[in-house]
Image: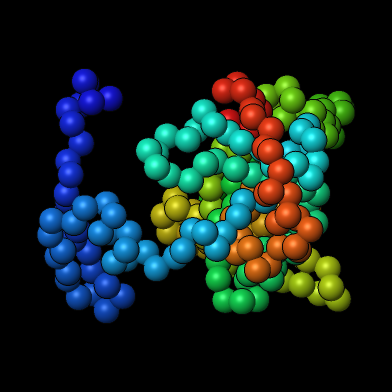
Length: 224
């Protein structure tokens, strides 16, 4: 990349307007200075939970091929059943913090309305076929992938059961309801592969898995 585009700059200028439309200019920032000044998050407090049923459960997975930041954090996932992702996401939302999640956004999603539901398009009935594949089979065959990242910003829980999630996307206010999508509980379970949550929302026995040697994944692994 440096050969084609040149050496990356060591500093940059940041221009932005705050919520009150006031203009700000912060000049000569290094990436580390930007992080310390504008990102109060301590990444050591977080963990990524994955649900990849084509891999061994209750194991730590390492995507070493994507460790592309010198001195950065290793790309680790704790592969667990889906209920751990759901419970941790709900707990973090109740604590007032949004949840990053990786998902297969192109499945059963309408970009204009922002609806995400397993029965949105009933193509099997139209074509009189059964095209269903399990989550594990979709990953193993390359049909399923974590193709996009969004943020969970709300959840509708009725009688202890999740009905739907409120999702903030990055496609502008022309998609969904001014940029927000509505995702059914079943869609979340079927097409979500990763969530980043604070460790305090994860059971101790799951965090203890981080003490074990991770499974090294190949560059062509289904989670890449």
